[in-house]
Length: 272
Length: 311
Image: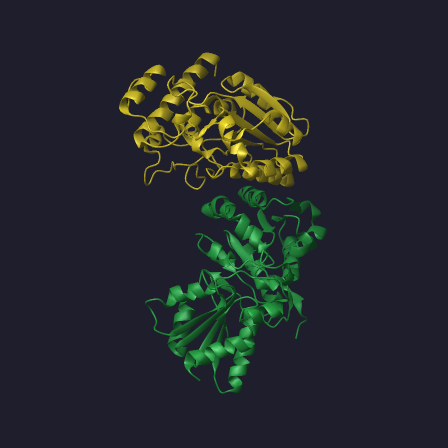
């Protein structure tokens, strides 16, 4: 996919995310929109998956540890054909396979149940450890939120990933700087997150989290025998002017006017 | 009669035996392998043993990830730090997806002894019992512990094995059945019934001996599986005996006693008394002294039976 079509694809995915969230009048727009290019770099440029065979043994695994960002994941999985795109419009409804937080038992292409923050990092680490034991060559990617890094479990997982030399494990941080109660710095400062992961034994890289080429390059960079940490600098609510950088849009439903304005900014029209 | 043996040693030996038969079995611990006795497995299969250090929450979620990869992880630590500290990890990362993770958690109940109330889990059965998809085994001796490990491996889903610390007499037969969810009736009598689990099963048999000396015939049930619960057995015996006593080294809230009470409610008018820890914390002491302090000796059980039936 060339850069121009990727750009159009990112707009399309964002429109899908907003439509999903507008229709169910719940869910998390800010942290879904910030994730789009990170997941695009994974799914369109990096990983080995087969939409026709979601459980393929040798597939790469993606664990969306910040599970509340799942609308972005669902939009991509639908786009790749893991399930029909129409399913998206039933997000969070009774009998939908698209749960409020990712459910591997219900949704094709989802590799782990997440949503309770911190746990996905450890699940991914366990998957990477199992791959080493089985001598399988797949990689495991965990996508973390920055507020999530306040969970002690993240650091338990980080310590064990380095201890077991899991160079098949990548932690990608959606570093949008905001969480429910405000900025990371107001709520519980992360300090120098690059230095922290480096001190825990990770190969650390920092990229513009909305630059697919840069993210893909970082994903492909050598891990030097270590687990890898990619700090993706992102903007919460990316793509919608009134949501960008606004913590208030962490988990707020849009009204009709807001939805229309957001869709227009993304080159679409109201389609609800 | 076989030798006396600790259930935790039987647990470690059973893991090693299982490991020889199935290379998908891997064992996880959190710096307690010489207490949970997973060290026996670790010595034999170091490439399949993963120590996570003092990070129980991480260990439980790692176990989920390992099980998603087609392996069968047995994760061990003390009951309080597994079922307690890592409760929500077990709930969301393991049980919610019916992950094929087993956790043999040792040092359960008062019988931890001298380490005291901070280490005596009196609520682990309650915590695990309310979680959907969970199977709970509480073996009563070393022979039954081995069977519980093999039965757990045969189940596709999460299984909690509650393992006690002390060296205790091995009294169940090698060929006694161990069918998940099916209680074992160790003694038949129609005057009163003692339903016991774990280390309290042997104490219940001693109580039944004492009652027999007075002409009171007691049924003794070994409730080795707390979930799924053998309600059919409880109702049948309630009808036959009309008086039941449950005994466990666990809080009377949420454990075996609660499971019996929930079964009887609205379905039986049998008299019923719950013996266990009466909504208080444990404390340091020798296990035998603690059982006496908390009213869990054969004498206490026999007295409760007599009181219930007025004889």
